[in-house]
Length: 114
Image (cartoon, rainbow, N blue to C red; front, side):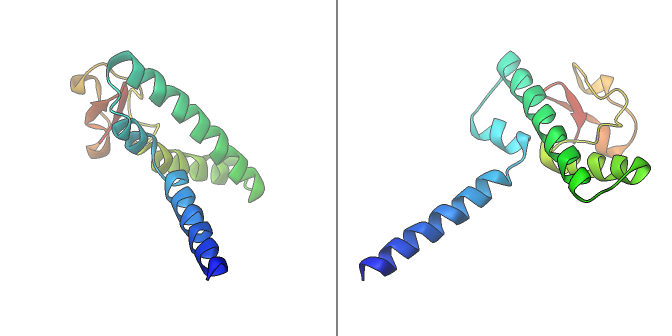
């Protein structure tokens, strides 16, 4: 009985850790109820961390050149939870700063996206 309980607790910890690891920067910031400069600072750091992790994944998959760039862009977009880095401009102060397509129309935490 004790082994079953320990196994169940262990499985729950693994599942919770996986869910937490899969959260986007936007979801984490929203969960922490960040606002203003704290939100912008958090998202910029989180975006940098996501970019580094995506670059490492691309290297692990032995992607090079345009294939690596496309993989990293898609990976960062998913990890940050807003728009792609190719939104023009990428950084913003309000919605009117964001242009470049439907997925780039909203300014959130200083990033153009959706």
